[in-house]
Structure formats: C-alpha cells, structure tokens
Image: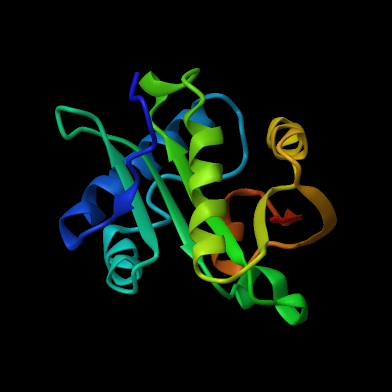
Length: 172
C-alpha cells in the first residue's frame, strides 16, 4: 500500500486513463444495480478540457498504473445553482477496485481539504446520487453535513438518477 497520498496534477496524457477508470467503475455500478453513473457518459475529451483547466489530480502506483483520481473545482453552479459559493468542490473521486479497502478515499478527501485550504478557501462541498445510502453514510462519517437534495443536471439524467445530495464541510 502507498505510504502517502502522492496526488499530482493530471496531464493531458492522463485524460484517457481517467475516462477509462470512470467507465470501469460505471460498469461495476450497472452490474451491481447501483444507479449513479453510466458507461460512456463522461468522455475523455471532456476530461481533457478539465485537465487543461487544472481540475484533475491523479494517483499512480509504483508501476505508473492509475489507482485513484479526483477533480476539484472552485465553483459549481451546474449542481449547486443559486447556492453556488466559492468552495473546494469534490467531483469524480474514484479508486480502482483493486485498491478498495486501503483508505485511499479518506486520504484523497484529506488531499482535497489541504488543496482547498492552500487556495485560501475554508469550505468543501460535494454531491452524489440521492439513491446511494452508502455514500450518504460514508461522507457523513467524514464530517460532511447534508444541506439538501437537488435535481441532477439534465445531461446526467439519462440512466434513472434524478436527484443528488449536496453536502458541505467547513475546514479549520
């Protein structure tokens, strides 16, 4: 297991691997009757645009295999609407299935908190499909407070999820 979270800024070469990991996890969700992501809904071209804006971070193991990623943005009107405020918005937190159980999720959330604070921002936010009680419990246990449910942006509603839970955590 890696000793520390060596998250680094993604490069254009990472976009395809990030999209493939998301599709792999989306297929796992479909196979396990979890209605959240659909394979193919987040293409590498979209990831590449976001990488170019400095939004994605990657974690590769010693063999350079992608094991985890996360996207951090400072505004998120698409999901938060009129309540869009400056915050470290966590999106696309993904851990390769073979790395589950190594506390990488917690370490990535801490990386996001540190990155947010380093940018002078003291609020962290995230969203997830409202029909996912596992994520609700997970993020609540990590100090996030549920603010409300909101409609999922239309471009993500094609596979049955219509609402997201919006959560927030104030950072010290």
